[in-house]
Amino acid sequence: MNVLIYSVEDDKDIALIINKTLTHQGYEVKSFYDGESFFKEFELRKPNIILLDMMLPDMSGTDILKKIRSVDIYKDIQILIVSAKNMLLDKVDALDLGADDYIEKPFDILELMSRVNAKVRRISNNKTIEYAGIKLDLEKRVCIIDDNDITLRGKEFDILTLLVKAGGNIVTRETMFSYIWNTDVAVESRTLDMHIKSLRSKLLDKGDLIKTVYGVGYRIGL
Image 1 (spheres, rainbow, N blue to C red):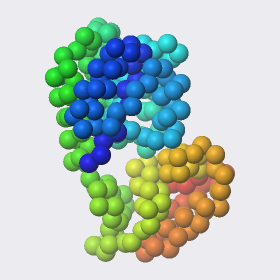
Image 2 (spheres, rainbow, N blue to C red):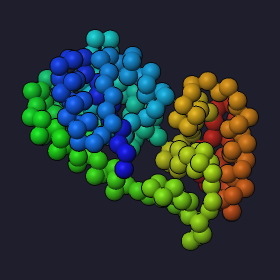
Image 3 (tube, rainbow, N blue to C red):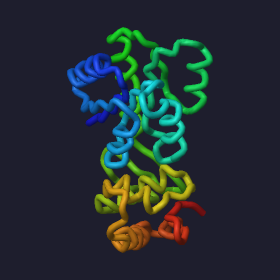
Image 4 (cartoon, rainbow, N blue to C red):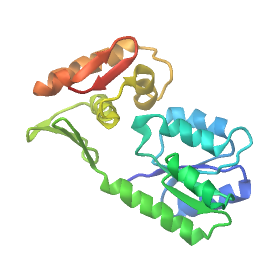
């Protein structure tokens, strides 16, 4: 499994240690020194894991954590806080806001590797998702309905994955273009509409589960 890790750390020495250590482990690692540069890349490509410092020059790690966790389809992204804040309340607040783990600075590099490897195992084990009789094998990229394999093209599978992960919540058109086409500008809105139409026709009696929320986006549900 290819794992993409974003490290958001303004201390360049610590950022270098994190980057070199995890790259040596075989992971793809990108380092960011502020929230703005992180979000620019985040809009283009979503990581599997984020290592997040809580004190950054332009925004707080708390604000970044809240923003990511406010979007339901990003819930599978593992977020590990790496912070010099060592009060119990700081840890509790971060975990309550949706962080998956909390590592204090200064940290032992072996502990960091162990925590990251544990999150990778969790991601690797989460290979299937299901909603209302639609089962998706994320590793094999196969859609299964009533024991029948449904052949979907790449973007169709990606769209259905977003909708299923949202669990009935609305996925905006902007989110779809950002996540699937790696752009924040819907330069060809008709492309998305055609993919949705094709997807509905392929999902047998489940096609009607994909609902259009006019002027906003789409959702899946009864």
